[in-house]
Length: 295
Image (cartoon, rainbow, N blue to C red; front, side, top):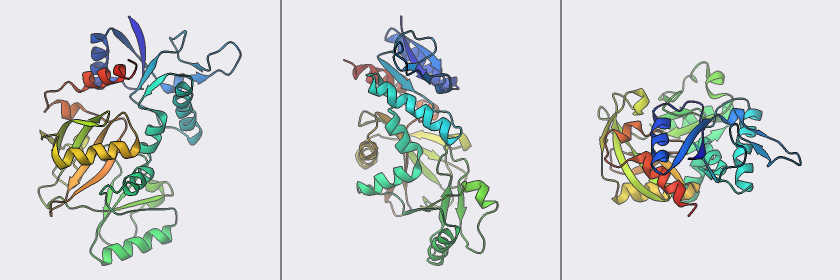
């Protein structure tokens, strides 16, 4: 059975589903951390060493890029870039991962391509951030402040008054202010949508309902399947195209006036909650698409 590297530090439920899906197609998924791979730029090496692989595989599946220092993260992304340069199909690519783990770049690309997304500001200056907050809140526009890197709703805060910045602000934002206008999906009936897109096509969607304004499944959001077509699908597919990605989870919110906005595009999306409410085998769809790119 041909081996395929799946880059992750924590295979868990998603890893098991991918392993089963690869086995259906005659491949053995081998879980490997990018921390254990390295560049070997000598005459006898292929350029990248992947533990357990004597030669470079035809493709690699990216399920996780571990955090670390700036140098460590760059080196791990370098591995993905170099593999692509050496002819390995990397799914998702290092470039698409870079574009989507960085919320500022994701927001810019959505805005640049004319995709509805909340007004957003990104700055280093505490003074400038305070000015933005003062102006917006004076106009009765609450703001959401998020870590530039992060997922599953961790570290997300709402700002409704400008008398003082949240404390300890420097530790929370790591010296950078990513501010986004809050979209009210309905006081008391908060919800948003996750649309799963594979190779430019929406294949599944759900609505997430929470007890507060953050609806992530990891924070207790309840999942319900919804149709993956119409305006919701078109917006998700346009978002995937804007960031140029093989597969992704697109987070979309509908305000209380009915307008849809794209909040985020996730290049390493979880789909356990979504799988629990839809019939399509998402892991198999991903594996089939990944292998199809080689045919």
